[in-house]
Image (tube, helix red, strand yellow):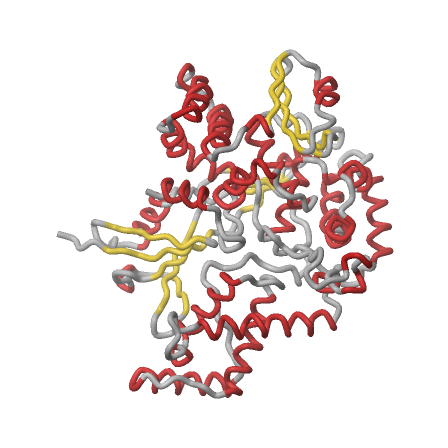
Length: 519
């Protein structure tokens, strides 16, 4: 009989376990197929394995290189770009921009739509699943190499102050490339990765071997922020006393920093750009919105003015009506997706829908087993699927989301307003006192989003898309989640989009749901 093998698999920001009861496949293609099937991956991928001798990942060329409990990394194949020429007389709007540029996976499945736009090189990346420990100075690396050898013999740790100082400086710099404000869980992840790579740095007497490193990183990151602020980092300068009003000049008052994995929360202007040049570009952007066939130029200008827009959104917190007047191009489905990508470095709608579809069967199984008054409300919602067993994917998504609100102990009616036979203008008037709402009309069929009483997105087609784009708007406009729906939005963010698994600490309700889904 073949021996069961287990692999630790890194997929983007997630760490998962793969168990193969039939042993290690004989070919790399068979292993790739097993990984894709087990984790429901539809795009083209390749696999890398972590070599213990070099402590780095290498492409798998033969499965003979693998053994039980090895670490594998999933690497997505580069997306192939296919362009379709649009006739001059056509007038594509931003919501139909997929006809201009479509990403096709190697398997031929359409996976995302996007018009390529330049991104400043200094933009950050999402926090990694396993923090990559950087290379230190030459002397420090020599000391660590020798120290690791000695540690394997007699467990003597390296305690040199100069070594520790260099390590902390480089780690703080590496952490800043992901976030200027690392939290406890992130500092713990860095300290854990450090002592895993260099055992000689483990602390004798510490419960986990790295608690002292966590504390040292906290102070070092604070000092590093002070240095970067002196160099003019906008994300840090916004929290300085001179940029606060007189009644907010306290260290912990109105601190503006990423709260939901916004990796490009308050970026610097692109090289060569100033407030004046970007304001002029904003005016040109409004003019471009009035022209035909200007989707590509609009997207380029939106990418170039991202830093100027974030300064306005974060520092001034304007009302939605005012902001829409200044940035009308943002309030289109395509640009909401693009703004989310600029802010978080991950796609929005493609990932949201694929993860929703992936979890829908299990979610429906869980919600249908719910009892009590909540279970009765869920059963009433499920009647749409029971009465139409061949329901479309769109219908299944909508029903699943309505059930999710109830399952998380929240009311979907706090967000979703249903209308029958009402004109859209009447709906807008009826919801003008709502702070945040999604309206779903039947006969005529229209779906839209209301924020601060103003319609910001219309003609979305279905509830799932509205929920997805509303999540995107909370990032684009730096809005708080609705307080009575925070748990459901946490599912949107953490489960469907895969953002911010370390900060803040997940709620018990979310963790219970996640654990049940992974069973």
